Length: 294
Image (cartoon, rainbow, N blue to C red; front, side, top):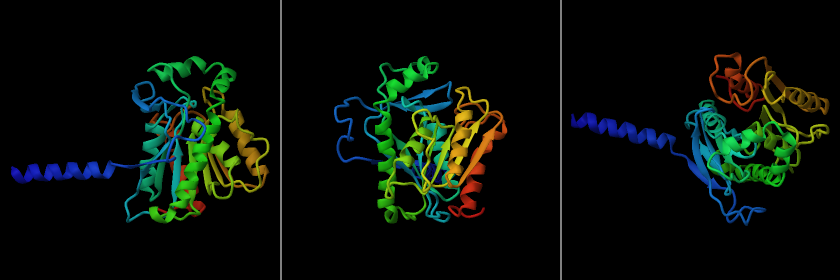
């Protein structure tokens, strides 16, 4: 009995070790541009989203998810969860994605970027009230969106500068995001400099209304784009335009537009073809040489 108890405790300890992650603050002091923010990050589980969300982020961080050393391939992906720049869907658009990337040997960094301050303890309800009025939502988000873009650029620079320390190839650092996180992915990429430019990107059902997708630079990185035609927010046409403009500028891109899946499918299971979008992403990364074949 004593041996069984000891073994059980050991297994539990190893599981805790496997899932305990290192968290890195992006800035040494107050984040530039929000020095007067005094609120603190909070977290809650939303049954509607079947996911944990984070809100009131004022101190941006990167949470590192490392693959098993036996399969680590030197590629990194920074993940930006969505949430209309008011919340971060940290579960299905963050941690769950990171764990899948780890299974393919990729080191994942989940970015908690700055978002609009919630006035209540129900940030989801606050966002839903604004969903039918994109102009008002854009107006409210306007002061924070550039700060989120800055957090994205800073995260890329940080990972690249510390690539050797993390066992990474500094030329294999990608940026991916979902919904507002996809907006961040695009926005940061289009204003990046060589030291902060990702080597590949994956905007997943991004909102393009606050990003200039009409003029895509020729030196933009390869892009993997995925969305659903029945996106409830009506993003499909602009996402198709994003793909067309990306390749028209001479850049590499791949588009997966699923018939059904809605907005915010992330890593959720709906028993639809869209459930396996990430396998297409893995195939694309393999094709471009960022990860090895299975």
